[in-house]
Length: 301
Image 1 (spheres, helix red, strand yellow):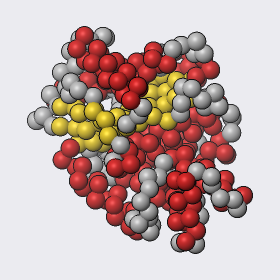
Image 2 (spheres, rainbow, N blue to C red):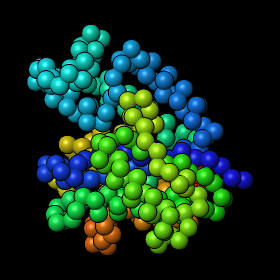
Image 3 (tube, one colour):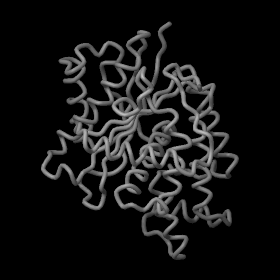
């Protein structure tokens, strides 16, 4: 029986920022019949942690920027961060409240009744100093589309892709790349399950794009912990990734995550093996919870 899915895609990192070692894109794929159910659960979580009156989006990077301000007892210069900082102070709380909120939101991913999947792509930027950003963008967009087609072609589903709004220049570029891939094909000759037009929405108003931001940020933090050999500095990112995100990564029929749920772009077997081994070590060491593994139909096994 065919189904309709919404795929919410967001990025972590910047290709222009030299201090940022990785560029990550995350797709959160959700059964459209469960959109309202999940939305209501997120609204309830926000109410339970006293954040419902905060009229600001909470981003992954906010957690760690605000941690610095609270630890140094200094006010943020950024107006949006200052608003969140002041709100927390009025509650006599600090950045830990935001981490708890992120924890509770990501925990929804392992609800066994929910039909959700995750796809991650990453670029180790120092390996590709001479690549044009347009080419890197294309690699990421293409890989997510390929994995969506491979995931859902067997049951003739429809997937509608929604990206977080970006600059008008990049939005035009992304739509052009998307259209060329969808209409002319590549490794995949016919993108039969993917809606032909790439849609955009503002993450400020879209809690699923906010959730995709948490997913991308957690994975980026996990990669940074490997690059810097500093797992203790990224405990939250690592634990969120292995407890909530890893179980929902797309897998092949042979139960393989790499090349399906996680893909390095551009493709490079040496980069893949390195991060595959390192992440497997993180997943298998000092696990705080039992790792649920979900099959292709979304059920736990």
